[in-house]
Image (cartoon, rainbow, N blue to C red; front, side, top):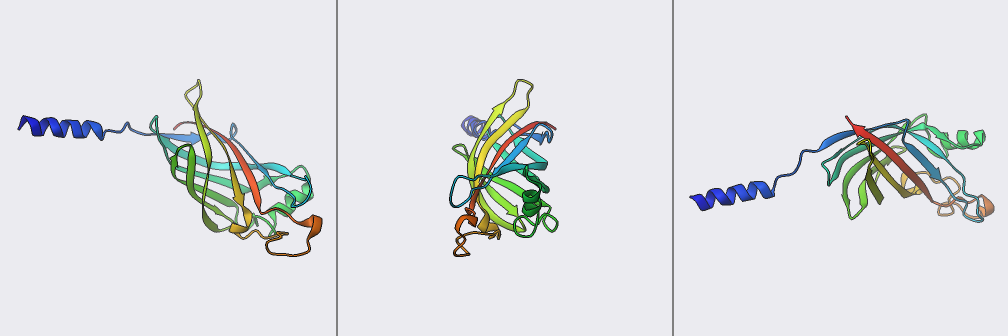
Length: 185
């Protein structure tokens, strides 16, 4: 009987996981920067988009239950005409799809995997991520996701869909670099 009790105690201790703490993104301290690329040449416009909401759980070892919402109406470039074009139907159609959402499935070996919904289309994505504890107890998530815009129905000036674009062709992939600061909720 003592052996069974000792085994059950050992089994329960082995399966114990520390309670996860919920973190809320500090929207003012978080930064999201996008970079696109011309198909030919070196032109690589970049700009920002604002994080609308973000939460995740962290137990000291594992990041989980993350959900980040991006306000696509805030996508911006220093050129006002490009900003307007990006918010329009050729690109992100921010009026019809004002929010993009990333939901984390898991993090393994420093690579986050989850589902991204952009322009009403949901696709699996993965990208490298780092997590750093800050001196004030907050956490900082950093990384860069390389995304194929055509997977989300954004085909404008893609040489995969249109021919003879010349210098007007835009690469399918773009980067979204993120630096998200979050504090305990």
